[in-house]
Amino acid sequence: MTVSLWQRDSSEKVETDVAIVGAGVCGLSAALECEARGVNALIVERERVASGASGRNAGYLMRGMAESYAVACEMYGRDRARAVWAWSEDNLTALRDLGASDLENCEPRPSCIVALDETEERELRRSISLMAEDGFETHLLEPSATTDALWRSGRPKVGLVNPNDAVCHPVELMRMLRDRLTSTPVNEGREVFSIDRDDHQVLVHARGLTIAARRVLVCTNAWAGELVPDMRGVIEPKRGQMLAAKPVEPTPLDFAYYLNRGDEYIRTGPDGLILVGGCRRFEPQDQSGDRGGVHPAVQDGLERHLRELVTDRYEVVARWSGVMGFSPNGLPIVGPTPDDERVWVCAGFTGHGMSLGHLAGRRTAAAMLGAAPRPELFDPPSGHVS
Image 1 (cartoon, rainbow, N blue to C red):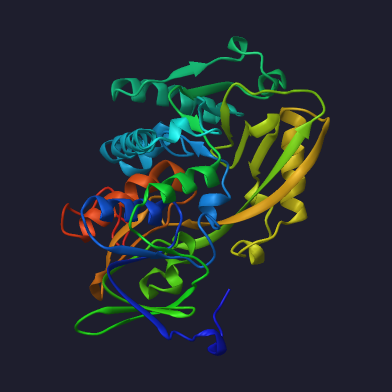
Image 2 (cartoon, rainbow, N blue to C red; image 1 turned 30 degrees about the horizontal axis):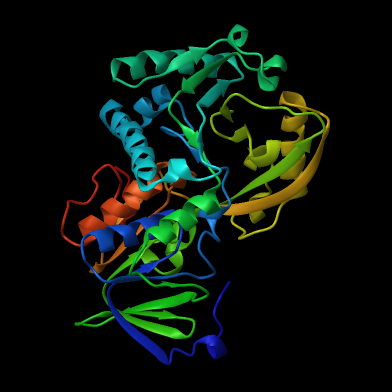
């Protein structure tokens, strides 16, 4: 979306200490941190709460990332991988402390990273050993140890189980975060089209509204480059697709599954629906960054996984997509923009916003307010990958 010249009436003006752009998991969490520290803030959102990727994902609250721990140790070094896994555990604990476990559609559900080939099987077995050494509770699931539908397909070789994970209705969770705010206005339907600066304040220009702020935090994930030029070409928008299918016969799954190194994911959802997502490798390259819509080739791939791994007797009841922000190394980009310490960014979650974003929003806000150091686990918004 864009804002035309005729829609840029900004006669309404407000002032605040902190303007937060984006009402997803990161932006809402940053606002909670501002309130906790007694700082006036407001949120401005293009559409409505959870209208972007935070309301379009599969609802996994899992430890770690799509890649196995062994691969992450090779990619980032063992200390950094250990810190990311611990961060994701703390992220879920913080959400539970806010009341996530009391939500109707949030429940404990172990996640299981499944190997469908011998190479990934070796990676998962190595991961089990490394995680045990680093103090992470986990275990290996052999095909003989479970009888749920996915394993009856005969495709999985082994699975790595994260026993303390959870699943949720992501929009319900975002509404909980919004409802925890007591003094922060959430301005919906106010698309931001530019950020200007002078010596005294930062001006955020949105549809029908101008915000004069002392600090600005951009939490628009895939679209950070629209407002922060340094993020253009660094955070890449990529569309993910999903479907929800009603099986003819009840087909519960014991775990929230990740397959093919996170490229696909399958779990039981509300009312016994089967949720299937991923298959981006079937996406035409010229459509990979589109804001919405579904592509038949991807949807066909999702249905093929559903038939091969779970059931061939079902009715598809919903298809949708969401746009994720991918960073160069798969980890978020957090910190002040190079040309202005008053404008910060927290974006590029690479499909892991639910697992990392609540804590990232809170700690980024604390750092921006000068109450904590910038999270060094994540790269600064300079395009440099450490």
